[in-house]
Structures are given as structure tokens and as C-alpha cells.
Image 1 (cartoon, rainbow, N blue to C red):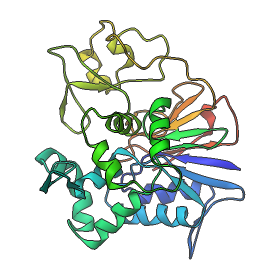
Image 2 (image 1 turned 135 degrees about the horizontal axis):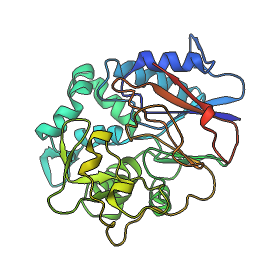
Image 3 (image 1 turned 120 degrees about the horizontal axis):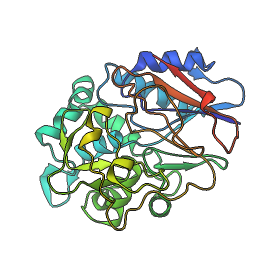
Image 4 (image 1 turned 90 degrees about the vertical axis):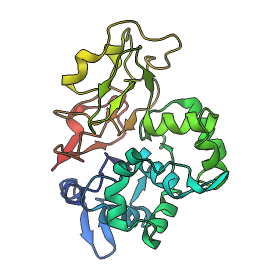
Length: 308
């Protein structure tokens, strides 16, 4: 079987439908049907930002429930779960704080589903069933970072088919716990604290003191080598050596890894012959991107398909 790995949709139903058609999927009464012996793999972040988030979730969910797709949990689905899950020590609070920043990041989803609505709670319950990582035999997929110790931890605690329960959620939102570190890594990637006095402004206009790192980049020496920022922010990244204990930069061995999350810009291209990022900023002006995989162990940049 071949897999079509599809990047972060963020409520862009029009781009999703255009990409599915381009990939040869056909819309029928029961949902979208893939070409013979193919299946879609969605790498997470179905929601937030875009104009048709409910339609996107319903489309993907129908494909999953009909056996025509698999979908991973992204950081935005994990945030949506925490946003409605009560804090165990404070019944008036939630695991994900309702701070002005957190509300603004989630505002469009809340507007479209209705804050506190039955629809919101139903979608969140489905989000809890989404796996954090997929090992498909010849290929792997995760939203942000395939870090084997983190994959092993969540696989032990959330074996295949088990929804995310409150015990795991409470641990995952407990800052510094093994579960929290694993969830941060798998859904948000490897982040490193910039040296004192250094910061940058992210794509959402928020000043950040931690920067996402190219964990796949072998031989990196400096912050500038690994920082994932827009081209206009690169000069804010210091060229000093990376901190001791930096976890990235090793060779990516074994089967290829497909990821989303990173708001790449420009023409879709491989990160390495073993790593393909599928998030090329579809939430904004970029296209929705897929990689059409047919079992190859060395990835081929010609297999990207983009729409929108």
C-alpha cells in the first residue's frame, strides 16, 4: 500500500479538497475515496486559524472512520483538549490556561464551534483518540519530532486504540514531568532557549525566547545553523555554539520520517533524504502539501504534491 502524507490544514477546507482531487481522491456520498491501494496520513493541526475548521475535521474524521486515512494529533488538537479539561486542583481552572494569548490562538476555532458547545466537546473527545506517532513499517510519521524515547513513553502509556485519559492529561500538563516533556517534543518539536538578551518575533507576532530547532540537521554547531525562523529573523539568531546537551543533530537512521508543524516557506523541498516536512504555511498564503510515498527509503523531492 502507498501512503499520501498530508501537512497541516488549519481549517483550509478548500485547499484540502483541491489537494485530494489532485492526488486522485474522489468525493462520494460516504466521503473521500483514495485511489486503489492508497491511504492518506494526516500529520496533525487540522484546526485553528482557517475559515472552515469543522468541515476539515468532519472530512478527515470520515476518512479515518471509513478506513481510508489515519490522522495524528498535532499541538493544536492537544491544546484544544487541555483548553476544556478541568485542572485537578482547581475546578475553576483548566489544564491549558485561558490566558489572553491562549484564547487568541484558539479564538477562531471557538467562534466556529461555539465555546462550551456540545460540538466542541464532541470534537475534543475525537481528538483524544488520535495517536501521537505512527510507525507504518517502511515509514514513520509524527507531528513535530520523532524522538524515540518520547515515542516509547507515549506508546507504553497510550497503546494503540486507547484514548488519552485524564490521568495522562494531568501528567502531560504538569510542567517538567516525563509526560509533559514527551508531549512537548512530539507535538511542538525540539526547542532551545536563546542566550540572554536574544529573542525573535514568530509568525503570529509573539516575541519568543525559545526557538524551534532543526533536529534533523547533522553537524550543526551554532544557534543560527538550527534555528527555524523566517529569513528576516535569521540575523537575530546568534552564531555562538549550541548549549551543552543539545538533543538534535544526530544522523536520522532507519525508515523515513514525515512531519508537519514548522511553517516552512518557499518551494516544498526535503529536509534530508530521510525527513520531509509537509507544513508549508497552508494556514496563510502557502499551499497545502502532500508527499506521495511508495515505499522508497531515500526520499525524492519530486514526490511532493501541492495545491492552493
